[in-house]
Length: 397
Ligand SMILES: Cc1ncc(COP(=O)(O)O)c(C=O)c1O
Image (cartoon, rainbow, N blue to C red; front, side, top):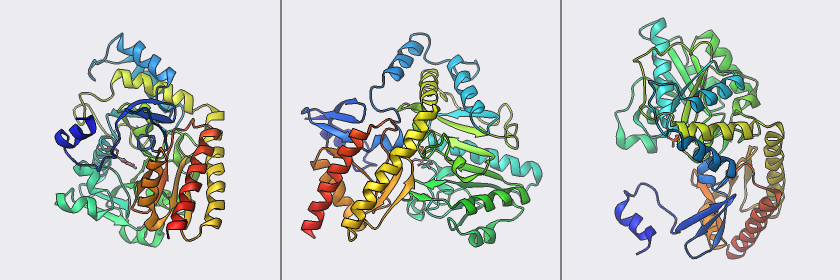
């Protein structure tokens, strides 16, 4: 019996897994047990930012693992301090709290928001988040995720959370008041289907955060670490947040999350208020330093932007050719969504038959989140395969 069958037998089925047995990876390719090579446009869901088997990552793992693997948060760890310093020196942040995943970063941010509010007034505990947002699966993060389908089976969740319509300032104004302690927002909604915030909306929310004294918390778990062509995605909208949450790409494939805090939020948590045994693992911190140093390179970020524009142009041309299949291409940098409506599922399957891994989100959006160091040749391979698939879909219609 292959390990895919054993996965179905022994691993709890919370994801509908693709029937493939991957045994190796290199750059933007993975190889299955039969030796078939697949172009990986899935990118581990926006995680494998430097691709598979990156030499600098492997060296960092070997180097740190041969010193020590875990100490606990009662001792300063050199790679972790280095990573915190890099994040502080290159963003709005003054301090960093590390976690092991995205949802844990949001849990910590929720606690920071609540404690911040209660330090001003005992009833300043209201949290706002957007309809269609996604902030994670643990109970706090789930409570601020603006999608009923994920929440309902687990209710009752954290109280005093309200949603506003994304990009609708009138809707936001209906729920905001002085009792709000924190607002969570993704600059580009990822799971929600690659929906970008409007600059004016973001700026008005920022202005209201000053007026009502709440923490503006930008969830950069999917859009951060270079994915949009900026180091952090909020830089695209001319605002400075109070808190940013990170995960996914930060560990280049290893689990890590982080909460970055600015002036308003950096001293909210005191010893004993919050903690984690594992976060962050020193080996992962060492990898995080590699990732951040690579991504922060000026050329790297401008290339992400240019590659995004290149793909968008190509898909816009395909949209002209196949207007009944592609209704929209949206997103920034290498965080792109192609709205293919009811064809998204079949397109994903046809891509698999053609040895290309594609991800579909929100039911109808083909989500393009490959490694950020994907080459133009590899992008052209993606475009050629995608074009071929569209021709087949058009023929079958
Ligand atoms: C914007 C956003 N926030 C939070 C999360 C949760 O992160 P994790 O799966 O690491 O808990 C995700 C995961 O997809 C995400 O995209």
